[in-house]
Length: 149
Image: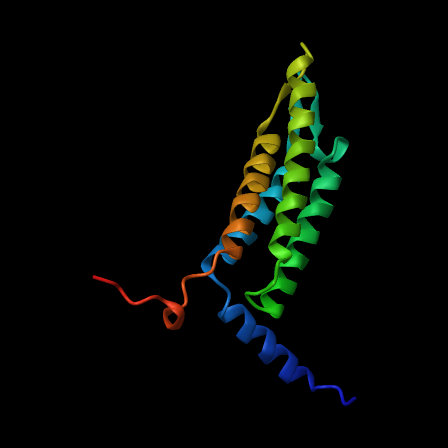
């Protein structure tokens, strides 16, 4: 099998990016929020800040990167793919891990949640919803029923 020249590969990927639906771009922003929030502070005390990487933030970052890879694979395969279900499940798992850490921080009388936890959760929740939006297809005009009167 002959390999394609790098210019052709780049042209194919740029064409794929140009055809991506708006929901995919917003979903990518949600992935970015998951990563940004995981790198930020999740807990704060009087003189101490607890980073997301000190908690489950590293797992959230791994899930976010996997979601981004799944999104690229989905866009490559086309609209008939069910891969957004996998990304929604990963994002829901990440949201559950974030909520678990939130609960731990709220239960601790000396430590409170910080902005990174909220940003990561908003990103994960957005990815769940937008992954489901990628599954929705607009109605095909050729299969529409004629209006009966």
